[in-house]
Length: 370
Image (spheres, rainbow, N blue to C red):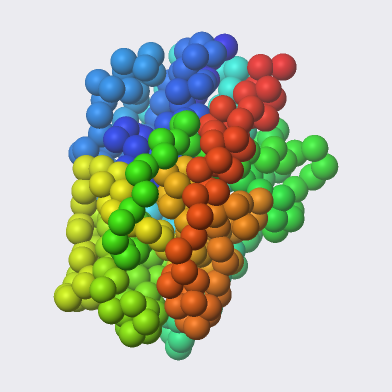
């Protein structure tokens, strides 16, 4: 079986939820036969590590520019998709497809679909990490004035792209039933492959009142979540638990997030491994009010035996884990109430049993090997 896989960035190191999902898929497709992986190299990619997995890497340097993005908007009709358009990567993908017949064309993310337009393969599969139109619309709901209007316009552009693109793929992968219901998909088109992780390792019980939020802290929805947490929620938690400490863990923290650092609040920036911070934490948070994402940080925390307090948006698609270590709180008061409770270690068993990558990706592997 010969596969050409297209994704945003080379997924090793797998230091974000999206890269973890892409790497999990790539590993398994490489085990089925030849895999050619086409993606951008942001300068930090582990090319040797990918090749050791048997993956044929075809990359293009990530060099964003206003001119390239403007050209991309003209081609794709979307600002967010335009960012990822480049003639160089399109040429790499087309060359890989022309070299030999393709059994599977696996495209990750809606924004990458235009780069694979009209390419012929026995099966064409699109993996939607998020419902991009809904993700952008949720950004708009947290903004006011011109910014809100711009987000609404982009959400409309992405809905049009979804209607235009989805029908050109044989199968479309979504992460939940709820996500499937948000898309104009024909019968039998959708495959539900939730997110997962490798077998989790239960960490020793934490001994201090530490709370952690682990995320890429330069991404707008995570910035909004961190600011809500630091400015509104955390002061009330400290009133109830004066010795409590907050860890904001993740790469590229925005200046506003960095300003939250102070007595009892640490902003770590990039860390090589989040495990030491999860080990310190009694509670892990996912306080998103907008956006999407893979929710892998939730499963990582639950798998480590750490209870998670999340908003409904933050745990969208993981409803089966609610009450099994995952608690939902959608306003400031509810967040404060739940954070100040010490939860049990039920999350580890729930993730270990139902949310491994092998279980999550089984529908995809069954479909492409029929």
